[in-house]
Image 1 (cartoon, rainbow, N blue to C red):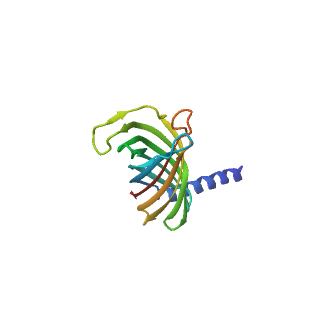
Image 2: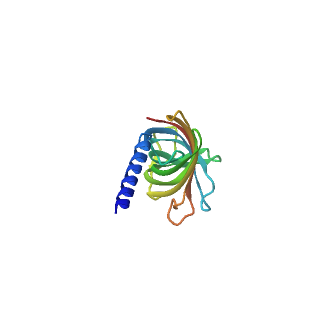
Image 3: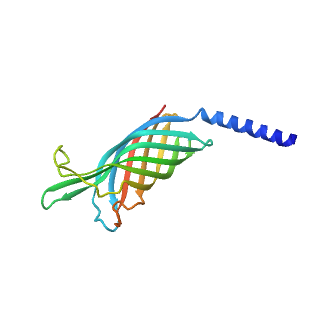
Length: 195
């Protein structure tokens, strides 16, 4: 009985020390950058990419010295461009999301890390803009599903545990439109700061 009590006390003290040492390194920050988004799949003829932005919040919870869990939430402008060179007409299909990735982050060397994990996209806006440079010409649509399950992965470098730069690729596994082989696909690059 004494051995069991001693083991429980030892495990509790050990986990408390572990939690305390790593909780000091928990960080919250902000991030933002550019998206280069399009769609992929057999049912759509490779449209041009839409250049937009993303911005939001990020947190990092270290699990070990080289491994962290990184949840995020951010606004992400996605979609694609349609260019009709014959008629001189341009249109931008805007599909904007609130993205919630939960990433596993592995530090390879000091500051340099790779990250990957699932991402959950919640559609907040969908419209076709026939005059992307003006405020006129927007047509609201509702063809795209409200939820998109995605996988994202990327590379990041963190300077002095605060400022960071990152690049990612994200692919949507959900059908963008029901019964069609069309999926979100985009690259992003940006910067951020951990407090």
